[in-house]
Image 1 (cartoon, rainbow, N blue to C red):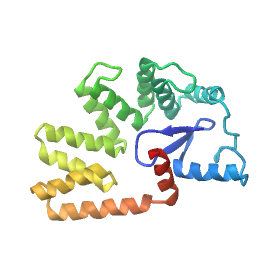
Image 2: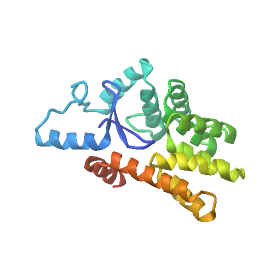
Image 3: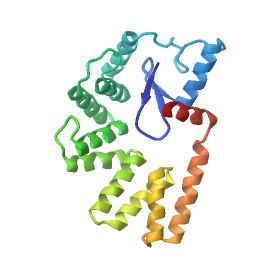
Image 4: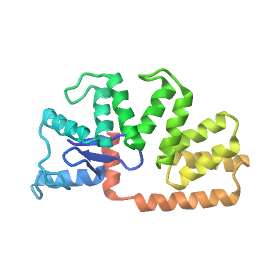
Length: 223
């Protein structure tokens, strides 16, 4: 099985053969057709046969790492974190790979590093570095990271800044941020107009991203 991008928005499957990603819902649909024999068991992008063993998958992944593929570094970091694919669990290696992925521009890696520094997972706890990495993840388009920025601002007493973050994130479809905007509206921190605008944008974003395949992928993930 290819690799699942564990962090944001629509879940994606990373193809280590060519370094591209596909919506997990589309990948599940493709696998069903493979099982039926309607299509060959190959990558939908480069037409290379899907790997059959962890060793083959790891070989492909490490080749992508040598090519400075940010997602490959991120994915290999996940493997070391979980101790999967024949690897021994190694959190130090995980952090090292995530840092390299961040240097190569991975927004997901910025988010992961922020969480690691916030919780002291594999690194010394450092809330300033967590803030720095969450800021970078938000700039890269990670709305969960932006939600966290809002939570930090609220904890620091910066209510207006907190709700600005949450309104931006909610308008891009982030569920928890929408809930906070609703709380802010009831408390008088968000105007009726801003709440209505945010809600319309949230609904529009959800409609654009909704598909039967993604619902199936979400159900499979929950199981």
